[in-house]
Image 1 (cartoon, rainbow, N blue to C red):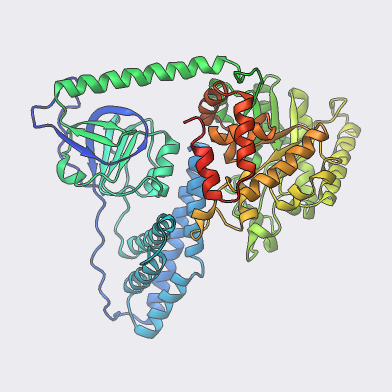
Image 2: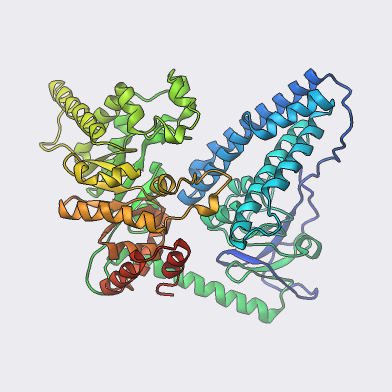
Length: 607
């Protein structure tokens, strides 16, 4: 499966006696590592020639359909491994897999390949190769294309080629790359690391990642940063110059790779590693310090989580609560559907483990790309098969159509709420009527539980809403009369405001939360919440960006929820800021009309 060469001693205490070489690539993920190289080579595909098939068109069509089905099954299996990834990486790889799945389902590529089989009599391999080359060329960089669009075009081109590569491997029987036999503690060296490869890298076994291909903004880079694996991509002639077992120094910040370092260079690298260890200790001390600005204001930093096993990192990084618990993890389609009692046990254990800190539980946010298999299992076909599910029945809209699902979940959360400090969050709100209907169900569930003799708190847990559609942001003045608190979901709000699907191949370079229109919508929500004395928190990706947090503090926000791994960096920034500096940043930002200039302003803040 992988070309493997004889491995010399793993001893890194002494330099090799071969000449030292220094290579320069693109630094992707910070960290200095000294370790031995382990080379992997992907088995090449055979040459695909455009020759007539010896089979009938029907037989070739069946082969192509089988390859598509197998590829979709592999993508589903890969998606199942996402739960162990950090939040950012999970979102990125999930969005990327969604793109791949769309490209395998009655897409231009599939339709055109099938036409080749019937009209030209080609093999399935040749049809896929020809059509993917055509589509990739059209999607890729074009002459005269503006510089800012080139990276997005390269990503789109790469998506066509990756889907074709997967189909061709399944058609030809050439196996995929695996990393399970790489010695623990090694530096992985490859000619190319694809996003799906990055998803199966175990950061506890792989010390660092080097690749000849790739760049700072592609999916692979995003994945490696999320995994926190020191990495350098785009290293010229890497696999020609590095031998199996070579002693390497990798600097993921500068992009520097040293082969066979001498004694002085080794000593310098060890000193850098000691400094990094010292900084990590500093982060540990930071956990115990308050998230307080130099001007005295306290800022609340909570964590978004999906699984109970994320709690240790939440506590280790000093989160003051759970700002968003995604409950979809309980409804994995490979497991039996959890009833009220099953959900109660999971929520109660988690709320108790938070020891009185806030736990914000979001009810099921099914729809879009989420939970489709479970919806089909439940016979909810119309919602699962929408032409454009991101713009249809999802979130609370779907639950109100199927109130038995919502009632079971609300009853389970209400029962669990006696174990600690709990809040309930409703997703995908676009009108006051939806919140009124949900509150009626909520109160009905409480009455039913009390009739059953279930002990509940005197006051029901607060019922809040996500502001993640422009409709909710623009009608927040009416929503404050029905909602106890707000959570600004900047990911979906950005997508719906800018009409850019963050998971789609086309237009991804247009997706940015630092856009004047989005700032104005956020300001409407923040101003109304503050006037009405309603708690309001940011729980989208903006909350994980320290400089964007500074901007939002200037807007008036004081509560943020992010992946637990992002908390130390945000806290460090907060502890260096004054409210005056944040106010000044916001006043300058809100006057801007150009998203590029706005982004530059925020990115250059406190740099």
